[in-house]
Amino acid sequence: KQKILKIPFIPLQNHLLTRCYKIIATSENYAKASRDLVYYLDKVKVIPIGIDGGKMEASPEAIDIIKKRFMGKFIIFSLGRHVYYKGFEYLIEAAKYLDDRYVVLLGGQGELTEDLQRKIYKHNLAERVKLLGKISAQELPAYFNAADVFCLPSVERSEAYGVVQLEAMACGTPVVCTDINGSGVSWVNKHQVTGLVVPVKNAKELAASFSYLYENSFDKFKIKEYFTQHYTRLEMVKHFTNVIKES
Image (cartoon, rainbow, N blue to C red; front, side, top):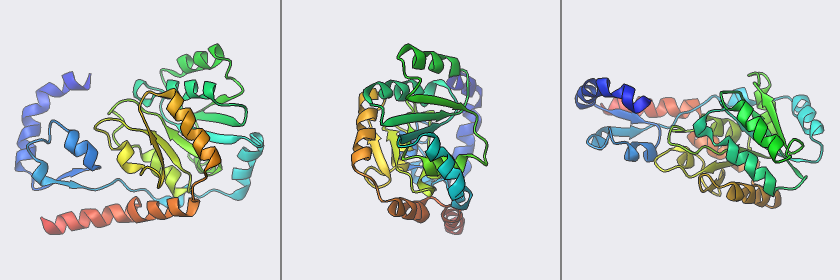
């Protein structure tokens, strides 16, 4: 749909790209894979999206409530609109290869919610996969902090960056994401530093990554440190300031 709707705007887009001094991209991967930027790469500057990590703090009581609800379980948390490019069906399928030590908590809603629910029932995964529905902004930090791993199983380049990965990192929670060709998702989540990167559309590899993290925990402090060094709002502003000065 986007490709068709974009056609009338192409002349204007090319005019603007030709005139501008700098073009900001959120990741090297996305810029290099862009057909629109192929003739303008000399103008491109990469500025990663940053967030306010302080907003991801949660009270010990709120975190404890979630952990007690799933007592003793290894919590795999995922979040997003239930749409085609998010790949949640592969996350649900991954639960088939996990035992009762694990629980998948999936937040969000969307046009595919009913399909996902049917898939859960079809494979008798109701005890292992829980659809949480819409989670309020006040509740979200507790889920990110209570999780043992955050998963972003997206399957298409429409997932350009994955800001939810930053929210997990700010909490020190390791991330499992997919290696989407031309997307910045796997560029944001540094393999074996902030989490693991697995092949796209591969439920077995997702399950294997969760098993690995069950046996091999990541250092939460190091994940938070990496976040602070690369993905805070302050770092993003510093990058923008430098680009303006260079211009």
